[in-house]
Length: 66
Image (cartoon, rainbow, N blue to C red; front, side):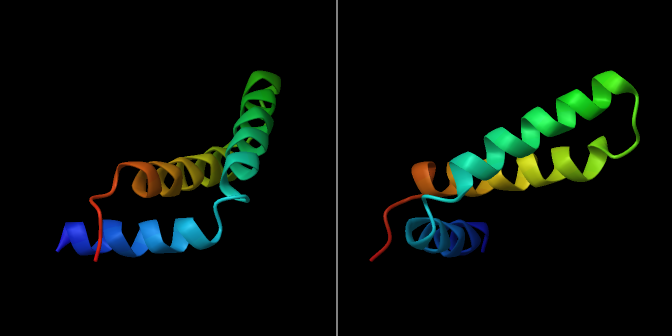
């Protein structure tokens, strides 16, 4: 079942590959800046970075689908 989820995420990634590297880098950097300033708004940014990284890795590492 999890393989099917990864395949679905991989297909979604293949159609939107150009968005996720930028989303990961900018949200991760903004989250780190907010964390270093002591602001509480860092959690959504780091969560967005984690989801972006998940989609990138699912697209790169997913098993080949038919």
